[in-house]
Length: 85
Image: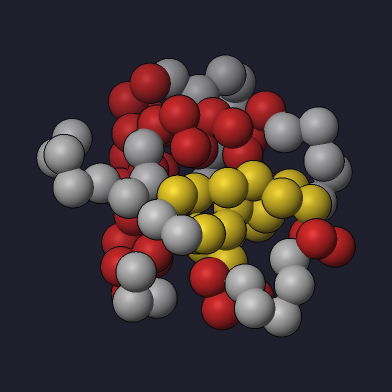
C-alpha cells in the first residue's frame, strides 16, 4: 500500500469493529474517524466515506482477511480522493 493512502486497513477495521450500530467513516482534518451517524454534523456530511452497513455488504462471509481489508481500504481511499480530500 502506498504511503499516500488516506484510508488504510486499520481505518476499515475500526469501522467494522465499532460499537455503534450506525457507524460511519468520516474524513476529518486528514484522518478517517468512525462516528455514529447521528454525530455527523452538517459540516462533515460531505466528508462521509461510507457507512458500516455499506462496507459489510461488500464483504464475503466470515471474518475478513487482511487482504480483504486492504482491498476495501483502497476502494474507500478512492472515495476520499473523489470527495476532494
